Length: 91
Image 1 (cartoon, helix red, strand yellow):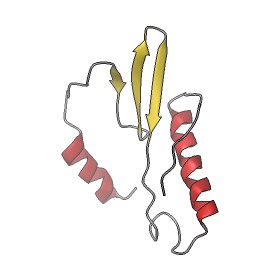
Image 2 (cartoon, rainbow, N blue to C red):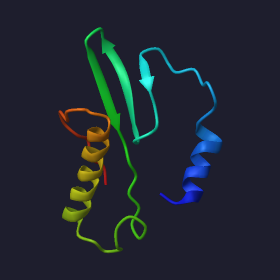
Image 3 (cartoon, one colour):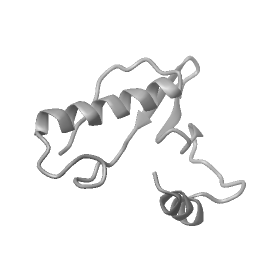
Image 4 (cartoon, rainbow, N blue to C red):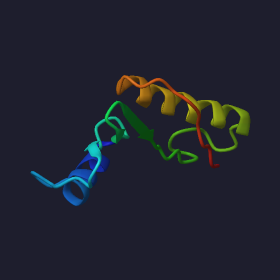
């Protein structure tokens, strides 16, 4: 991410001492959120946007774009200490 992107996120989406929705333990950080499902079960959700010409070359084969998107999502989950169960992919 560029410095400009971090600044945009900080200015418009994160506020000091912001209240989280019920069941949400944390947001942001590793492009992921941690949600309490029950007393002994948590869910980590991850999302990234990949832009042609920015995150991968124009005309790059779809197979490699999908691989990159999945690897980024798995990396975010690993950073949160989560065990991946499945994934959603939109191109």
